[in-house]
Length: 85
Image (tube, rainbow, N blue to C red; front, top):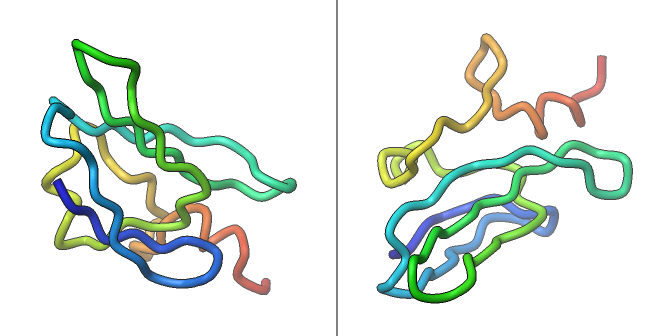
């Protein structure tokens, strides 16, 4: 499964192994800033983690088992936190 995600250095595509059954989203902090972790759940091996994600391409959100947290204007919360007031 391929997912287009925004990391601190820009947009990239991450590939998860075929044995990943579902991908969930968890929040956390990296260097004092909110970021997302994508967790690829597998039954036969340890889960796969994609760290330091700032956003997921809306076209790929349907591949996720949980929702990407977004502000009222649709901006992903990690990016909304980084916006100047």
